[in-house]
Image (cartoon, rainbow, N blue to C red; front, side):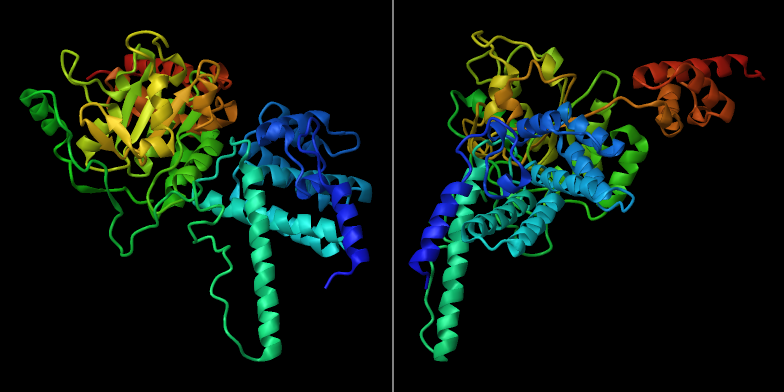
Length: 525
C-alpha cells in the first residue's frame, strides 16, 4: 500500500525524469535507459550524431578510433567493435579511474545502440546493465522506467532471435516499450496473486491476466511474430506457395501456365533448413575472402535465425572489385540454396515480376521461376548491381524497384499476385542477396526493407590468403591446367610489389600476367 507522500514524490520524480517526446541531441546512457528517444527515432542517425559530439579528450587512442569511426560507419558490426573497445579500456587498471568511468559509460551506450541495431549479444548485455542500474536505484519513478527498459530489451532480444526485428523502423522502440510495461504490470499482478495465495494457503487460481503474449489481444500479437512456428518432427519444413493456378485468358495460356508452374501447384514444397555446420561454412567463406569477414558473419547471422534459411533482403554495398558479387553468391551456395543471378544493370523495366498474357507471350517472375525450377520455397535471388537498374517511373515498362517494394514486404509477399499464375502466391520465403556500388540510386523506401552491409576492398595483408583462389580463376581464364595455378614464393613476392591492396580484378589481371609469363618461358617437349 502506497502512502500519499510516497505517491506524490513518485509523480514529481516521474515528471522530472520523463524524457521529452523528441530528441535533437544525443541523450546520455542514463536518459536512454529511462526511455529517451534516439535522435530522429533512428539508431543509425543517433549513432553518427553521438560519435560526432562525444568529448574524446583524455580517452585512449583505440577508443577514440573505434567510436570516432562510427561517424562514417554506423553499422551494427562497427558499433559492437566500439563497445568492445570501450569495455576493454574500462577494465584497464593502467588508466585513471575517471577515464575508466568515461569509457565504461561510452561502452554501455554503444551496447544499447548495438541492441537497437539488432545485435542479440548486445541486447543481453544491455539488459544486464539495466538490471545493475535498477539494483542501484532507490527512486520509484526511475525504477519503473528501468523495469520497463529491462523488459523492452528482453523483447528486442526475442525479436532478433525470431528474425523480425527491424532496426530501421523509427517507431519500433515506442511500440515495444509500451507493450513491455503491460507485461511488467502482469508480472506484478502475478506476484501479488501468489503472495495472497501463499498467505491463505489455498484458494482458487485466477484464469488469465489478459497480458499473455500468446493471447490474440496482446499488444505484440499483431504484426510482430508473423513467422509460423516450426513444424514438429525431424523432416524439413514445407509450405504451399501456390494453391491453384487461376483462370487464364485462353487454352494456350492455361497450358503455358501449367507448364511453368505445374510442379509447385497445390503441393507443399520444402524449405532448405539451416545447416548444422555453420561454423565450418563461415570459416570456409572467410578463408576465400578474409577482407569480407564482417559481411560474411553478419549475413550468415541474418539468414540463420530460424529453422529454415531466410530473412530480410541483404544489400552488400562496396566499391567495384571488392568481390561482393561472388561472395553473396557463395553465401547462398554455402547455405545450400539454389542461386539465380539477375543482372539489374541489364534491365530497363519491371519484367523481374513477370508479364501477363496480354503481351506477345507470358514471362514468369524471376522468384516464381526459381521456386518452380528448384522445387524449394526459399531459393536465393542474387540481384547484381541493384543501383544500376534502369526504367522510368512513368514509363510503360516500369522499374525493377517498383516490383521489389511488394516482394520485399513480408505482408504483401505472402499474398503476392503472380501474373502467370493469375492467383496469390506465397513468396515470403525467397532469399534476396543484392550488390551495389553505393546506395544513392536505390530508393530509400527499398533500403528500409533490407539489411545493408558493407563490402570493403582487400588490403595488402590479404594477398597471401587471396592469391591461391585468384590464381585458380586466372588459370581457368587462360585455359591452363589447374595444376599450373600454384604460385611459388617468388611469384607472390612479385605480386606484392605491384599490388598494395584494392580491386580484386586488378589482382587477377596481375596473376594472369604472372601465369602467362611462366607458361611462355616453360620448356617445351
